[in-house]
Length: 589
Image (cartoon, rainbow, N blue to C red; front, side, top):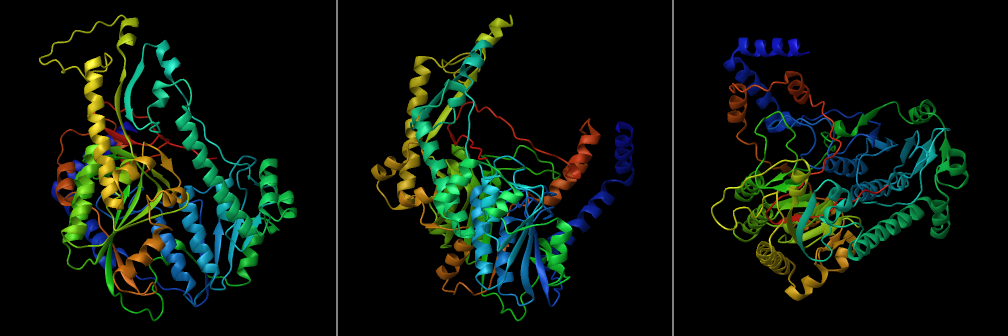
C-alpha cells in the first residue's frame, strides 16, 4: 500500500497545482451554489417515506464531510424532523416505513424523533417499523422507546426486545494511578462538578451520586411514560416487564410490545401491497410540497456541536474537525448577524463544554447578535448542553430543551495530571530552570504548591462568579437564585425547566415554530433555513494544503481520511491548566 500511495502522490505532483486547484474549484462550485447544492427531486404520486434509523443522524453540520463542501454521508437530525413534518402534509406520502435495530442517536434526539413521528401520525397516516432485533438479548430501552412511537412494530422471529432498564457506571482511577506514581491534582468550583473525580477519587462522591440518580430517574420515568402511552400498556405492568428483562419475539408479541412477527421480505411484501414506490429521507428532504407558498422569512441555523476550544487544531480541508472552535463559531454568528436577509438565528447546541475562554468568546458574539444587530437568537438544545454548552446558550432570547437533554452544570474546574513520582520510579531525572516563582505552576512533574492552589482557587472563584453572573443576566434571575441550581449540577431538560434554566420543552421543530411566531408568522408559514458555518477561506486552505511540501508519511492513512473511512471509538483527554467547563460523560444502556 505504501507503493500505491507513493504512485498517487507522484500523480498529484505530475498533474500540478493548477490542475488540482481547478478540480477542487469545480467541486466547490458544484456543491456550494444554493440550488445546485439541494436540487429539487421528483416525488411519485403515491409513496412511502423510508427511514433507516440505524443510519447515524448527525447533529447539524457534523459527521464526515469534506470541509468547505457540504457533502455528508448521512442525513442530519434537522433534515429528518423537517422532512417528516413535511411528509405529514404531503398528499403524495401515504405512510412511513422504517428500519430500526441499533439506532445511533441519543435520548434527547430520540424524543425529537418520537415527537415528529407522533405529529405525522396525527394526520391519519400510519408509521410502520421493522426490526431484526432491539438489543439482541441485552438492554436497549432507549431504542425500544423510539420504536414505541410507531403505529406497528414488526420483528424477526429470532429477535428480542431489550427492555432491561438503564444504568451508568464510572471508573475511579486514583488508587490505580498511585501504583504508577501518577496523581490527579484538580480544583473544582461547585460540589457537583464531577468531571475530575475519576482521577481524584476512589469512589463516587455523594453529590455525583445524587445528581446521577436524579438524572437517570428522570430519563427512566420519561421512557416508561412514553412507552406506556405508545403501546397502551399500564405503566406498572410495563415496569414489571422491564424488571423481567429482555423479551423474546413471541413473548414480546404476547405482551403487546410488538404487533407482528415476520422476516424482512414478508414485511416488505406487506408494504408493497400499499405502494411499490418509496423514497429515502435524505432524498425526500430536497422535495417540495405541491403548491407550497414562497418562503416569507430567512432563518440562520448555526450548529454548535462537540467540545469547545479556542481554535481548530487541524488546518487540513480533508477532516471532520469535530468540535466547536470559537474562532470559527464567532465568524459564523457574525456573518448571520450582519446578513440583512437573515431575520433570526437558531443556535443548535449539543456540547458537554470545554474551554472557559472559548465559551466566553462565543457568549459575547451571541449577546452582540441579539443586542447590537437586533436579531432574535433562539437556542435548541440537543442531547447535551452542559457547562460550556450551557454558557453559550444562556444569553438567548428563548431556550428549548428536550426532557432528556443533559443541561446546566454551571461550574468550573482546573488542574493537571502529575507524573513526578512516576518519573522517580522509572529513574528518570528531571532538571528545571525557571525565572519567576510561578513558572512551573502547571508543570506535570509536581503538584500545586499551597500558594499555587490558593492562587488557582481564587481564579476559579472569579470564573464561577462570572459564569453565575452571566447566567443570572441571561435568565433574568438573581445570582443567588442561579447559585442554588448551579454548583456544577446537571439536570435533565425537564428538571432544568422547573429550575428556570430553560424556557420550554421541545426539540428543533418547537424552536423553529417559536422563531416563526417571534417574526410575526404562523407556525405553518414557510421559511428558508440557511446553515451558517465558517468555510475557513476554503480556496486558500485547498491551495495551502496541496502546496505543502511536508507531506504526511503515512500516505495510505491520508487517503483513507479523504474517503472518510475513519471510525472513532472515543477518547480520554486530560486537560492541563486553564479553567474548563466540562461535564463528565454518561453512558446509558
